Length: 94
Image (tube, rainbow, N blue to C red; front, side):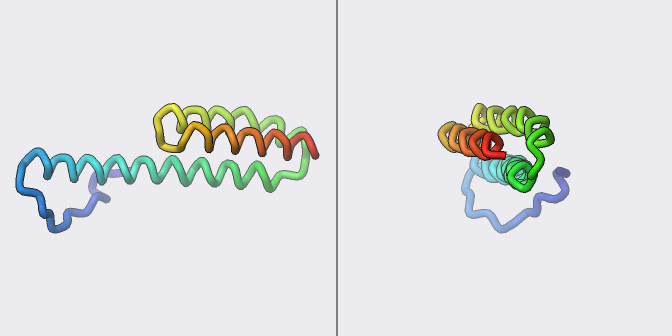
């Protein structure tokens, strides 16, 4: 994630602080989107696994990722809990 990727657009801001806030928001949004997408891909990958041993190896890393994202408010804490619950149920069924 490079800062050069953030494109300058026409701003409606009237103050330096609000212009800075716009820049910060764009940077943080890009950062959060990256981690949310990475999390979705990890969950998708775990759901696609049909071998129980392989799923049990991958589950702790996905669980850790969900907890970290919930702690940083990138995803809601309840969403993380619901995902962990559904994934553990799915692994138990394998």
